[in-house]
Image (tube, rainbow, N blue to C red; front, side, top):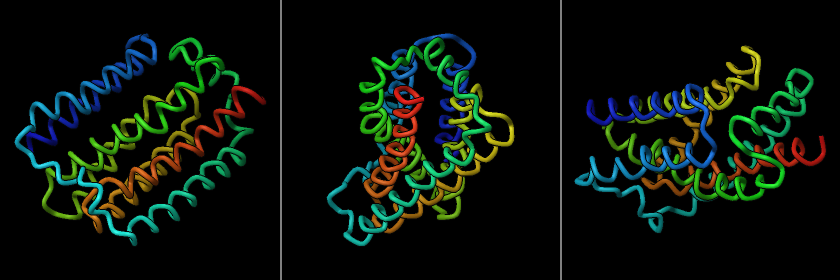
Length: 215
């Protein structure tokens, strides 16, 4: 457990530094994330049984809960953006995406496709699959991975939001991560949380469509 937790903390902090400490494109950030969240864990923890990847074992009840929860979260994200839009500096957000991440309107569709499928699976593998497997107690499986999941996203939101909105976003991610893991507990796989994650990403990406093409 200690070894896994140290690795998770180190990986999260390193990615936070890459996100805010140095100026690299989204492609390089993605490569670093793949190495830290997938390649290295598969090497370091190669003896760990990855039963959470046995997606066929997911029960129908878990899938129904996942689809319903995903739809709810997607609409909550869209509604939150609409309510908070007057407090969000969208021009600065666009500028940051263009200059720091290299994400423009022309490449957004490709980035969106990766975020929806590749990035969501990568994060679920790490935060809802590998990391919870280090904890035997259900309470820690629910609490710690979801907390690290929220902390990891701080660097992404940091340049975009004021402190109150940033704190609200982090709390929302923590609660969301808690729900993700809670749904997985029933099935023992990451498929339910992956479904919810993709629905949440759809909500975020729809906001992105508005920002890039209609704002």
